[in-house]
Structure formats: structure tokens, C-alpha cells
Image (cartoon, rainbow, N blue to C red):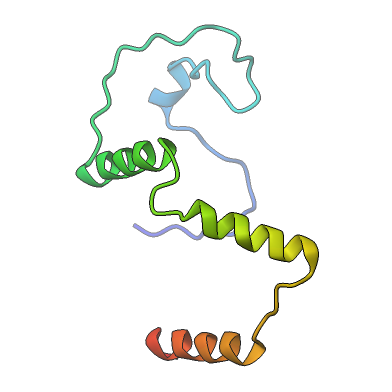
Length: 101
């Protein structure tokens, strides 16, 4: 059996659906009632790995050379930091080649 879907005409609900009450939680419905947490959640290995990475990164500056960061901040503040446009362009082209562009 095929039906044409053209977006016109009334929407008919099956008879068994008409006798069932509609769910209480609908878009825009009041959400002040507490929700019971009866179900448990199990994370995938990838999600657990991401949580572990987030914990590691949140503990402090891993692999960041704070002395170098502070030196660059000072150079930017006093105007002595020079940007090598040729080096930036070369690295951008190298990255593009590595990405297969």
C-alpha cells in the first residue's frame, strides 16, 4: 500500500492512539516537576577517555611553558614582538599539504 504525502488534509490518528492519553512532557510544557532518576547511564570507552582527558587538562598547565608564555606577553605588550609573515605562510602551506589539499 502506498500513500501520497503532500502536506494537505487532516491528520488521522489510529483508533488505539486516540484512546491513549498524551504524554505530559511536551515541548513548551511546564518543567518544574522533579524528574525521578530511575535509569542508569553507561558511558562508552570513548566517552570515558574524554572525561579522563578533561580531568587531566583541568588540573593545570600540562606541557605549557609558562616562562615562554610570559615572555611572549611582555614582547606583545611592549611592541617588540615581530611576526615573520613568510614563516607563517610557509607553515600554513605545509599544513595544507599534510591535510591533502
